[in-house]
Length: 321
Image 1 (cartoon, helix red, strand yellow):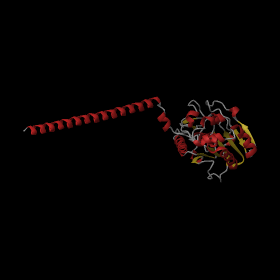
Image 2 (cartoon, rainbow, N blue to C red):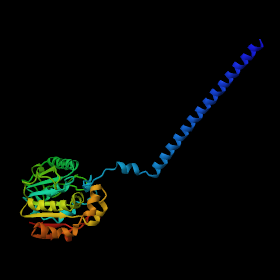
Image 3 (spheres, rainbow, N blue to C red):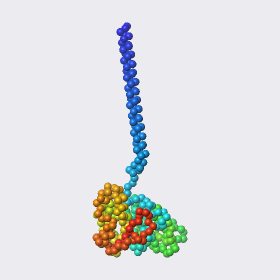
Image 4 (cartoon, one colour):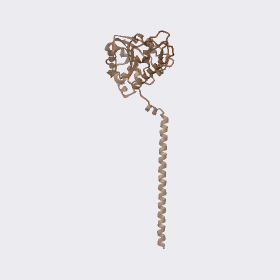
């Protein structure tokens, strides 16, 4: 009887010990879980604090890069809303464009290309750009211009040629800052017959080799070609322009100054690399075009340029083949 009682006591003692260990283990697990939860909470708080301290970090990571100068809404910040037209149009000569076959290299959204065709009456003008999105924008601006033109007020008389209407008739022009249509003092015809756009890397393409032009424009583009393809790319640009021009043809160039290169040299690894190796500076371009490429004369149009936005007061040169 006593032995049985002692055995029962031992069993009860073992059960108590097991329960105690179980409760201890449960408390340990709860403690570990609580600690893990606390650590996770602290980590989340630290991440939030870092995000608050660097609010632009995520934006910079996702920010679009434009290594070819192919900015969206380029004319939106180059041309202010209170301007009737791009100041550069005032220094361009009508005889360079009227009835002429023209090429605009690096046309971006095409607004300037359309405006030149409309103002001066080109026989044709082709705008090329390396970015298919900007070419799409240009085609949209052209469609929008023609649509507005075709919905002119009843009774208005259309002229037979672009920019060829008599004084006092109505003209529709694009506001260069936002692509909207403004009414001027002359009328134009459907520009689909005059203006076209296509995606091309001008330095490398052979699609234009059989074409010949009376006037070629390269406005604020030389820097981007120079940074992306170096001195060799720049010489290729100049040589190809000379080859595509008819005898007596005009090349209008607006080169960016070297300080502008400094600002944009880090937009890509390629531009950074070429920036370090460039030998031919913008101040050498005129000499290169006259003495190396073979242009006969040059005219500096810069002195007549006025009303440009800050940061865009650049030299404009017209070379004749």
